[in-house]
Length: 306
Image (cartoon, rainbow, N blue to C red):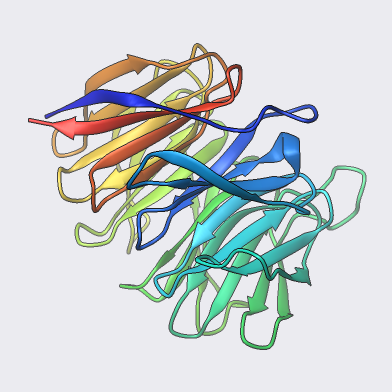
């Protein structure tokens, strides 16, 4: 298999400083990307590979996550809120106050609870926290302190927990989803700056991409450190492709997407993108990868080919 270029999608020009951040894909193949420079979520129709609209009014939006029942969640770092949006409609936005500068998002669909991992601020005491939001009640129900600045987060249905990356001290915090005030485990990560995080649910592995240019395999149940692989630069977003047993890693500088065969824990290929292109989205149904290009405000589209 190899990633083959399949065109680009023009997105709105940047209205302010910054570029793109996290992205997600819904069940219909629509792509939602946080356009931080525009305080908006841009929406791409995956079937036609065209930009269709933007969802505005999300100050410094950093994260986007779509649930199986097609709710779109956003982390709005500039206003300390998360947004709850019907993904197909995109016009009604409910905002819920959370901690300081929310970033990573994870969702427990059974309990309909959203976790927001808050970046915090060094000048604000006790601001490194995780917020838990009851989606039906549209209210924050818990605030959990952590040791430092958070990065990404995932929900693990097999263990009924949330896993959250903390940059410094480098660690993964695992919380009970049923009682999120209970920290089940803290795993020290043997590389600086845990950043991207994803889960191989069937294989019971976490993949953690670190600023120290290391990709690390971690047992999702015990926290034991497994194999490692070197990255070409400091990573950001990662996505696991369960069907092909590979992992996509976005590296903003020099601007590449690295693809790892995680069965052998080795690099399968590396594709040049654009300087600053640190974020991507993956549509498992169509085996399509979208890489967001901040200099030319486009999405580059790649498809897995034999």
